[in-house]
Length: 381
Image (cartoon, rainbow, N blue to C red; front, side, top):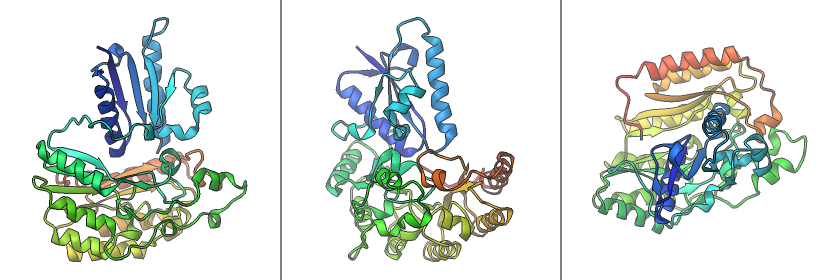
């Protein structure tokens, strides 16, 4: 029997994609290998959100090349977020790669192979319509597209029938489920002129239709909570600018929905938030946090923060530190900014914050959030 090895880098969305890739392989009669050295095919599901993530992919391929030097080696297939570089650049930079597989070509026709037997990741949308200047996701995963609710509900019912009690709904912005506009393609937007600036980038809010009544995401949460056997529902990730009051009310009233809310802030400085095209201010974010806390007294928060974004001054960073203290995040995914080729920030802003400054700001926030709450963190899917 042919054997495959699947190497996954990145976030929960990548892990969920890999579960479906494994399902596709096994539906065709392949079996998984515990060792890449013994596989006939190696599939690498890549992350590109930070330069370090791409370096880890390159390091893995270097180990494969050294091991099989001068001998017949497995077929190597690359998929995931690094595909935004394009086939030509990938082949030039990573000549060991034999095939490039767009993740969209691996659908939902075969059951996912899940490692956990009680908790399952369930994607509700793919891609992203937001125009945050630092983010590579829209270029690597394409425009946002919501799955049909009937397909999602059928998948969750099937999971519940086989013993799953907890699910995590995944999307780059789950709040906007069912509201995305088709819009202009990102690559067309960014390649359409050479010297474009921040004013040429549309606001995130403009990329979605306003909900007519109850947002589709809230309706989906209500429908899933009615499925027998499902005891806990998590979701990530949300954007602050479309975290509707009705969603807050649903979390407060629905005991099956997790009291942990992951709400990326990215920065506590209005100036930096504007350069990031995040679509909200510091005051907007804190108002939302306080509104959620008032409605859900036992809520805990997680967040994403970028330090060293182009132009970030000591004052900007101090504003982020102050916001973090006010909110008291239980966990924070802190990243040092690295330019991602193709993004708006890479085109518009010079990477002008020294590496040692980024590293020190990272250390401060790590100690303030993750180290301070190390022994009493909430459950994070």
